[in-house]
Length: 149
Image 1 (cartoon, rainbow, N blue to C red):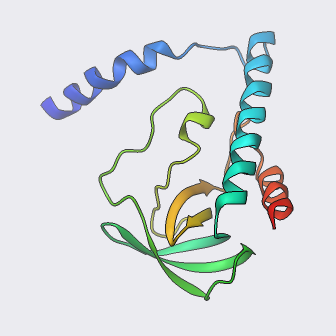
Image 2 (cartoon, helix red, strand yellow):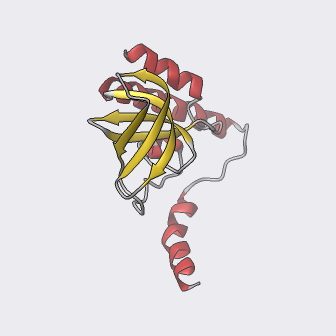
């Protein structure tokens, strides 16, 4: 219980710094447009830099590595099953109000299907296929990757 309270205290300032927005309000739509533009730019830069991009299923996840099944290769030549380097278990991703601040998160969860960017065999982005309205739509991100080939 004490650990939970400590965690809440650590993250409370971050949560309170994030503005509350009414979905559909003028400010919400303005931030959404800015967010999508930033994420599009980040995806473009990352797709150009990545050695490989694929949609894959996380089969096994260990400390600093993961085994993935490639379901759809988008960039690069890949085996059907890959061993990739990850930040490791217990490494917190970036915390921020908007999805662009977490764009480079590489959290992998066994059984999850994700869009993965690899640079020299290391996961630099693992993006869920399930996205909110502040997230760059999956189809848009896939189109950006296709343009980078």
